[in-house]
Amino acid sequence: MDYIKLTDYYQQLEKTSKRLEKTYIISQLLKEVKKEDNPEYIINLIRGRVFPTWEQRKIGVSDKIIIKALATSTGISKDKIEKMFAKIGDLGDVAQEITKNKKQTTLHTKKLTCELVYKKIRDLAELEGEGTVNKKVGLMSELLTSASPMEARFVVRTILEQLRIGAAEGTLRDAIVWCFFGDKLKIKYNKEKNEIELSDETKKEYDIFLEKVQHAYDLTNDFAEIFRIIKEEGITGLDKITLKAGKPINVMLFQKVKDLKEAFEVVGTPLALEYKIDGFRLQIHCNNGKITLYTRRLENVTKQFPDVVDAAKQGIKSENYIIDTEVIGIDTKTKKWLPFQNISQRIKRKYNIERTVKEIPVMVNVFDIISYNNESLLDAPFHRRRHIIEKIVKIIPDKIQPIKQIVTDKEDVAEKFYKESLSLGNEGIMAKNLESIYKPGSRVGYGVKIKPILETLDLVIVKAEYGEGKRAGWLSSYTVACWDKKKEKLIEVGKVSTGLKEKEEQGTTFEELTKLLKPLIEKQEGKEVIVKPKIIIEVAYEEIQKSPEYTSGFALRFPRVMRLRVGDKPIKEVNTIEDLEKIYDEQRSRDK
Image (cartoon, rainbow, N blue to C red; front, top):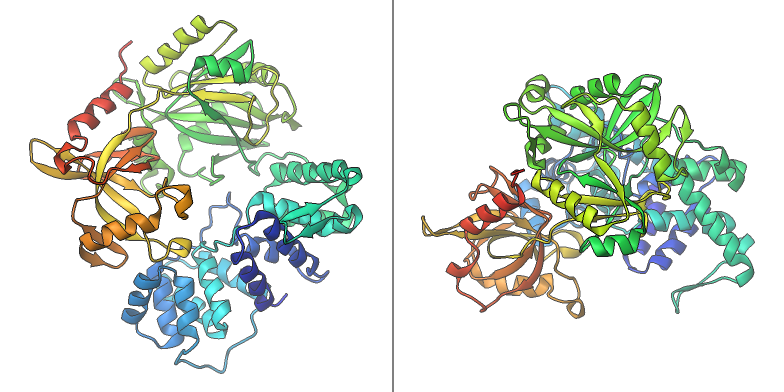
């Protein structure tokens, strides 16, 4: 397929925020995939990816390298491109604009196809060693020289993994069903009403097809493979897909409830209660003895955690399994559990791994199992999965163990367990339905998490950054600060970029906050501006962490803007560093 045809569909997808319309557009594109086309190229390009999330290979191209490639391919100076980027906020749009009047010409331009673009972008990840940057610039320049303005726009966005056309997993799933079975089911999309017309007779069959495609995706994380199977074998071909260790699946998520009473109402009784540890989630795969580790985002981190690999080899009595775990750091002196930020640095560490293993050892807490001895346990009840865990996981102190669990139908017993978990410095507890299956995604009734509700903070904005894409032209990321009474100055405590809205009727908007901040700008460098500390916002968060990144020594985990406090209080009455220290000590209390 020619790449220019794909960009036509990109533009259609950009113009609508309606999920059903996006589904219809993608289904029409998929109908154009010919026998000679490799669906891998087209479907992954729709998603703005050239590698599965679980692969360690990364494109590895920054804004600066893209700017250099654009300068090389168009003959326009880097300074001019950087100024345009600061103003427009989207390098894809910059590429489109400057490619219209590019000065460079070459006899070696070639027609871009989806295959060519896909393979060239993948090649960027293979470049390494001396002169890597220049090699990447050369490869990208080759693509951009051959690209039309619109093609250049989307090539750049794809390289930066910022396609932003709204092709979400559910949309692509539905589009595959519409593509192959739309005629059979007589599916009609009514654009004016933005609804699908489907008879009662075919609604059940439609839901079955959706469930089959979703189940296949849960097992493979590969829509291209699903598309190929249906095209060659029909919907029954998906029944042959089996769960295989070594290829990650999406994890099951749990919603938060406000207290134990609500947990019992949602989950039912009796229920299983487990510690909710302040670690990070690892999916551990063992395929005939070969162990691979994946984060909750399905990133391969096997090399970063050789100690986890060793713990799994010693502590799990099986050669084939997929288990779900929470990994916690261990203080080498006190043997107490460490909060998440102490071990988060290990996830992206590529060098000096042996030293890091000694400095920050970790312990594996096994809380679920997805397959065992090549048997899928996705549909097995949780109590059976827990039984298997207890059977095959050998407890090795400070190395590996099943997560601590109790089963109860009494709220007072649950309350005691909850307090016990918090006293150890954990985040809270999990409550799980004993009969629930393992279903990727957030599922009501399968289980919930209970955590203390932390007080919000009033903080002042001291810096901001211009956004990209839909947020271009708006200041959409804010560095916030608290007050240091002793030093009589503001000190930074983190960045927040969520919680605000894009439309006025939804609440406080990025546009509104941008209008308030612009007159306060004192200095600008690239997309970042320093502002006079006048605008106070109320910020919610999940946790306060130690962090050397900010002048306060703390950072907020998952912060979000709750509301503006403009004119509500003077700057010196924002929360203080003492407030943060107090909250941090309370949430980290390890008194038994």
